[in-house]
Amino acid sequence: MKKCVVVTGGSKGLGKAIVKKFLSNEKYNVATFSRSETDFIRKKRKENKDRFTYRSVDISERQSVRSFVNEVSEKYGSVDVLVNNAGVARDDVLALQPTNDMDSMIDINLKGTLEVTKSCVRKMLPQRSGRIINITSIVGQSGYRGLSVYSVTKSGLDGLTRSMARELGGRGITVNSIAPGFLKTEMTQALDESQRDQIIRRTPMGRLGTTEDVVGLVCFLASSKAEFITGQTIAVDGGITA
Image (cartoon, rainbow, N blue to C red; front, top):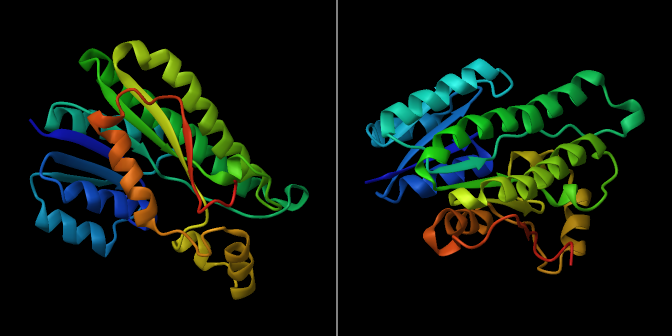
């Protein structure tokens, strides 16, 4: 029987790479949502009609999130893996941060993720099995100027990981965080060349990360090989936080 993987924010960036990787394995059905459909989503929908489900959902709309999870569970018969990837970053020093930007990060990164996790956990509990993988950030572990609110949301998810690991361990459900460093995605394209060069100089591996650097760990934590790993935050950052 195929396992069902739910990936939030799977239309671009890291989420896109995660969706693509799981779809390459016939053992998985994959479901994802984002606020808007992309060419990638349209292509995968055509290629994987039976194994792939996509819906346009705003993660901050709780009822839409619940309906999505219920639909996926009914279609595939289970929810086995949840990858909480959806997130936004708005940089500014706290004193000047627009309230709307603060609310957006909290609503999407924290509240939305909590709602998805709650809905999926309710499907996992009767199964007495499941994998929850939270994509956080090294920003939640180390201070970065201009990213105070973003840091709050990501460190909050690391706290969720530890608490949920204790809540769910007895039911065979593991919960872990992956904290990427600076990756070559849409989020870092806004950086200018001098900013990217500075990050690279500070990184022992001497480069920005790629989505593939993270995807392998996601798949490992979703597998039976990681069944005794829970409550951990694992940095994938080329050594920048070493």
